Length: 214
Image (tube, rainbow, N blue to C red; front, side):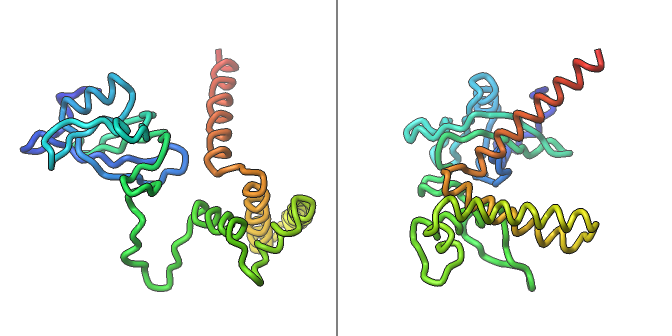
């Protein structure tokens, strides 16, 4: 990074949006000065500047919830940063995974959705069973029933795909994705586990392509 091209404000600060490398969830927004940015790059873990205390602080110094830096990207004007990290614990001092959890507004006719929220809802039906819930029913029947449903939904996806019916295929893929998440929760597999595995495969494929080009 060419530090001379980074545009710090009149107080010598630049906003840094911290983002989870795996889920792309925004974890927090903090500020860095030149010293904290240099420390972040030298040590490989996030270091910020506290505007209230007027001092540097390394994330996780007291809590242990450190953030390993994967990349730092500046915007077109180089006056704001996005810091992608692999976190070792909750990012928020409240214990929440992200500091952004207060939904203040949802656009008309829009329903907020994320794979993470769906996964958490499914996990909640396992830890806190709800009468009449299909998800709770699947967990009560155990892995054999869950695997049977995954197999059935996989077949439905194949059939819809073979017919080249886009709408039906989308519907069946959504069904399969849901049942796969139920299976994941039952086995203790997280979305992060899957994202991490896919990330490793991307790197492997990239290396293979490079080797073939040589």
